[in-house]
Image 1 (cartoon, rainbow, N blue to C red):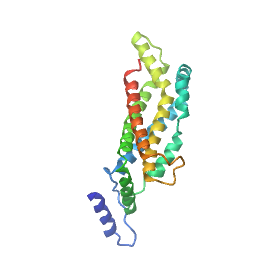
Image 2 (cartoon, helix red, strand yellow):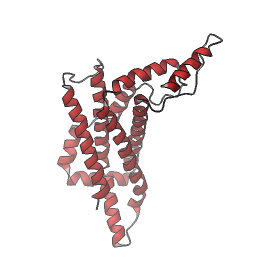
Image 3 (cartoon, rainbow, N blue to C red):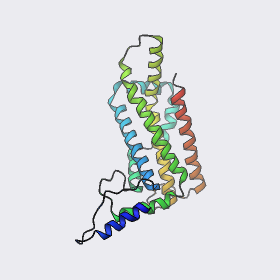
Length: 234
């Protein structure tokens, strides 16, 4: 807060030519800045994952094979899926500073402050975004590190086991993408719901306690899913 205040004073005192002076300052530890960084990471990770899935035929084959084995699971998840574009749109709607490259101005300080007031009462949603940032990064790194091995022929029992694990990792990538998108939307919806904005295009008569419970359940599911990916691919 002190740095932000100094920055604003700097802007005001440097207005010698009638034009406000812009600075490179941007906050690092406000609720808004932390949520914005998490969202930026989530959207970047999920966009990269989506492109890898679409552009790799072997990954598509793994997904099709997994779908044939678990059609009900895929159908249930698809019924609740939220398109990444919709998540991106709501994220930019709530956080206009997302991916912004313009220099920090006094008006940005006030926008950051106003959003931080809302986020101060949305701890569960903020924590979910932080968890999703870490989880999506971990999954994407594992995915990128492994997809090259799909084209290799295993030469030993250990190699066959590793490739089987990799096939499963790639096979659930569609489920992972849809779940990460849905969980991110749940966190954003909770923030939007608390803000009581008219921009909500869904049932806004939901009780606040139910929305918080949805966020908490999403965190629990994310934790379970992450543990499964880490320990149960064999």
